[in-house]
Length: 253
Image 1 (cartoon, rainbow, N blue to C red):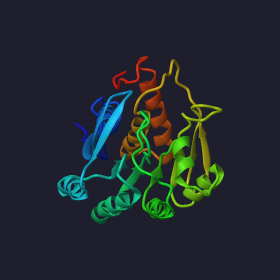
Image 2: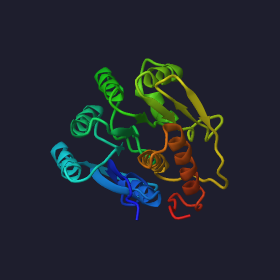
Image 3: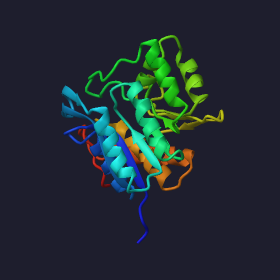
């Protein structure tokens, strides 16, 4: 039997399993990857309400990462919600010290789909930390609401150009006012690809951004190119979005 590639997700715990590490692990398992998970936050939430967030201490996050990477080969890491960009930089540095060839996919979660604000990203020092992080990762996967909040003094077009000058950018189109569901991939090499939606009977899902970023990470681990991984990740997410009419998607189609 062929051995599955290992993928590490570093993200929060959502008891409803629609978002965070539980959604990531469901996705990776369905794609025939083996998923490891490190918890950055324990949340009290369901698919429509968010009550609180209890952050995991940095030393515990690093200890969980270390014990996994000391034993297992991991080539792709997906990172979701984390307390602030400074801590994110420290976690990425910690990862790359162990494997400088790691492909790191960052989903920059600023607020939840249930409207909880995880951290502020408006301060100039925070923007500087964010820029430092971009130079170390393989792919950033914000939606339109998130990318518009990353830089106070930049237009959308300027933010796209700025980010894609340092790393690959997959801009999710689920929150677009026009052409909803049309995603765009901007590569660090200056190319732009448009990924049009193809799914039918699609309905909103809690944690869809988590599913998409972990699906892309999974396909990268399976050996697909960046463009093909993004394309297949989008199609996978559309299947989850069309799996039922509730806010919680199914991963077995």
